[in-house]
Length: 83
Image (tube, rainbow, N blue to C red):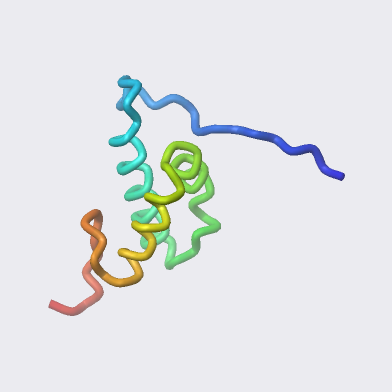
């Protein structure tokens, strides 16, 4: 049986406050940008996944993921060629 290793995102000097809400939001949006810039290859964005998963409440991530899929996410958006 393999050993379970618990790890979290390293500290980020941009977010010195104990309230990590903004850090969560930024990390999730950075993940979306990474996936978009890597042709939807989430595997190329493992550090971003680790960062938002260790900071963000899972309920937020679930809601944001649903919003991304529905095209209603209030964060980062990408021009898909339609205007």
